[in-house]
Amino acid sequence: MLRESLVVPMHIHFTVFLIFSFAISLAPTEALFAQSKKREMTIKIEVNDRTYIGKPLVWDGENMQLLRRDGRMTFLPVKSHEDYKVLSSDFSVMSRKLMVAKLKKEFGKRYTVSTTSSFLVVHPHGEYHKWAKPFEDLNNRFSAFFSSRGHKLEKPRFPMVAVVLNTRSEFDRMLKGYYQANPNMLGYYSPRSNRIITYDQTKNDEDSIFDTNTVIHEATHQTAFNRGVHNRFGDYSSWLVEGLACLFEAKGIHNSYIHTQRKDRINSSRLLAIQYEIKQGKAKGTLEKIIRDDDLFRSDDQLAYAYAWGLTFYLSETKPREYLRYLTNDAKRKDFTAYGAGERLELFAKAFGSDFDNLESRMFNFLMKQKVTLPKGYTLK
Ligand SMILES: [Zn+2]
Image 1 (tube, rainbow, N blue to C red):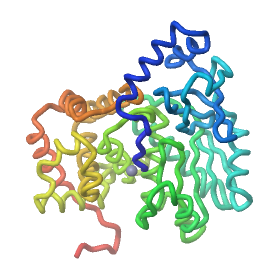
Image 2 (cartoon, rainbow, N blue to C red; image 1 turned 60 degrees about the vertical axis):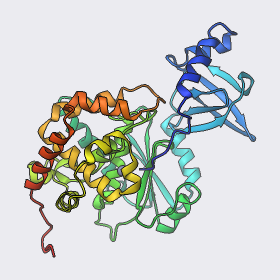
Image 3 (cartoon, protein in one colour; image 1 turned 135 degrees about the vertical axis):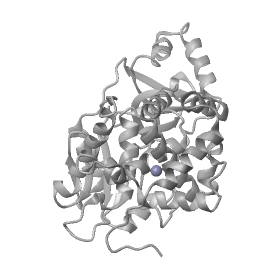
Image 4 (cartoon, rainbow, N blue to C red; image 1 turned 90 degrees about the horizontal axis):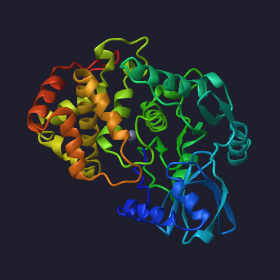
C-alpha cells in the first residue's frame, strides 16, 4: 500500500475547527460549510480550467481535501470562500454506470470493465470469472472473517476500483512521477485514489489473479479501508494495517470456508521471516518501537512486515476479542488528526496491557512453536 500522507499539515485539525466555528456567525454559505462536518454537501472548485465536484473533507484556509463523487480524494488550492461554489446541501455517490463509462474512457479499447456488487474491475480482455469474481469473493470472505468473530462490517460507500494492467511496463509508467519505481512492487492500493493498481502476472488462462499474494494483500487493504475496519480519512499505525493484510495472505484466512485449521491460517513465508529475526536476536525490543511510530517500516522493512504479521497473528489467535475491539477503536479516531506516539502507546496498553516486554516474550514463544507448512517438493536449505 502506498503510505500517503493526507498532505494536511499536523496542525490542520485546530485550524479547521477555527474556520468552521468562525463560519457559523457568517453568511449562509459559510454557515452551510460549518455544518458540513456533520452534514453532507457538494461544492464545485475550478482550478486551471478543470472542474472538481465533491464534498469538502478538511480545509485550512489554503488547501482543501475534496472527496470526489467517485470516491477519490483530491487536494486543491482553496484560499477563500470565493474559490468554491456550493452546489447542494447533499452529497451523492456517482452512479456505477457513469463510473464505468469514465473508466472505459480512461483505459481505452485494450481493457474491459467488469462490475461485481462491490467492485469495478478494469482488466485485460477475458472472463469475468478470472478477473473480477476473485475480488468479490475476497470481499465476501473478508466480511465472513469478521462476522464469524461477531463484527458486522459497513457496506462500502463507493464502488471499489481495481485496475489490472496488461503489462509490467504499463504499471511502471503509471507509477512514475507518483511513486518511486520499485521492481519488487507488484501492485499497490492508494487510499487517496481508493484504487488498486496491479498488472497481469498470470502465466496462463487457468491461473487466478489471486495466485500472487500481492493482489490479496492490496485487496485486503482496499476492502478494510472501505468497510470501516480502518479509517481512510485518518492516520493509522502501519503495523496494524500491514499486519492485517499479511494475515489475509494465508489461505486459512482469505479462504476459511475450505481451510479451517490453525496451520492454514499461518502465513508460512512471514512465519519463517519472523522466526529468523527472533533467532538472530533482531526482533527483541521491537514491540514498543512498532507501536510508537512507523519508522521501522522505513529503516528495516523485512523486520517490520514480519513483526507486523507475527503480532497480528498472535493477537488474532490468542486474544481475538481484544484484537477486534482495538481495530474498531482505532478506526473510530477523528478524521485528519495526528496520531502521535503517546496516543498510540496508550491505546495499545489499554487493549493489551502495558507490560510490553512480557507480551513480546509470550508472542515470541507462541510464534516459535508454530510450524511452517512448505509447499510440496519444497525443502528448506
Ligand atoms: Zn501493505
